[in-house]
Image 1 (cartoon, rainbow, N blue to C red):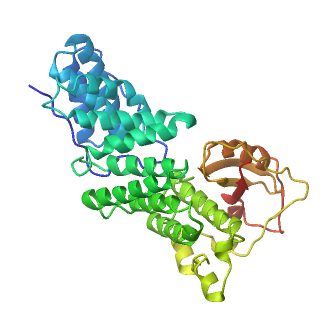
Image 2 (image 1 turned 135 degrees about the vertical axis):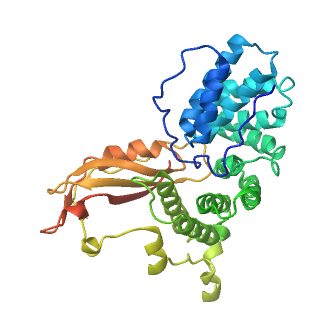
Image 3 (image 1 turned 30 degrees about the vertical axis):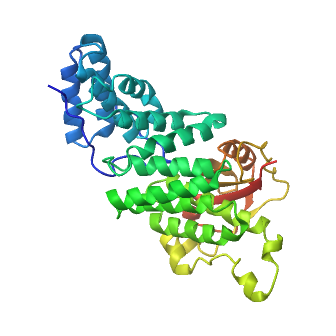
Length: 387
């Protein structure tokens, strides 16, 4: 008998750019029988406990290797299951070993999965795990591996992977390929789950980033970024990383536009200049993407002079020379910054450290009688050039 490979519910994967949940501290079976772990996995899937399912999938595969060996087709299938389960909860890098094993044993496990599917899982895991200097190479490998499963893959992991490869390539000098991948991700989303607004936001973001290499396309890129934020809407949880990422990219695109306004393409008649104006976000649209408490709407905080400046980072392997950081912080009743945390940083995560180091020492002058609610979750947005 070949074990079933669970095709998880559409949309079960954690979105790209978000942090996957940690494994639950569930009691693990004491036996070495792979069937015990597999049944625990099966039950966890039925209950929608995907983190537990991934834990049991790993156990089942490791026990199958030790008990049944590589010639048993179930060992191959369980390796594939382990890699896929980890990818679905945002832990794809932890699935590199089982994914490699699934590729190696693909002929043995041919009744459970196709080799091209295992190769796609491996390519996705390696992109997620790659250091910055290897990101472009791994994104190109994923682009190739994805072609073999597009149109047939059963969940939205294919959308997430194409979006991630698209943004990676667009920020590393291959915007034409990035645009192609953004289009392919839209096709897959329409096929699988067209009403998934969270992933629609990601697809729009990938399309926006792919346009930044062409100064004439920056206003269109900004419009896509605004549409992405509208598709996602307001924060869905405290310090929502996806919301923060969308906000940070909006900052970058606006910064790219401002930096390029003096280029020859912006000169000409008034009518010509209009096409280079950025779309205005209306009050109604802003209300869809952010929440301002009524008692805080007209309160202004002024940063005190002498605050430490944010030091720019050394240049990285990106074709976009601007960075965007969205920070949330609380303020003390005396105006000190407390509990600052980065909720969105692009395209280089190193901006986080530089921004937090400076902002942690900032102080603000507060107007009298500020409601305590207005001192929580104060937004600080930063755009700076990478030298």
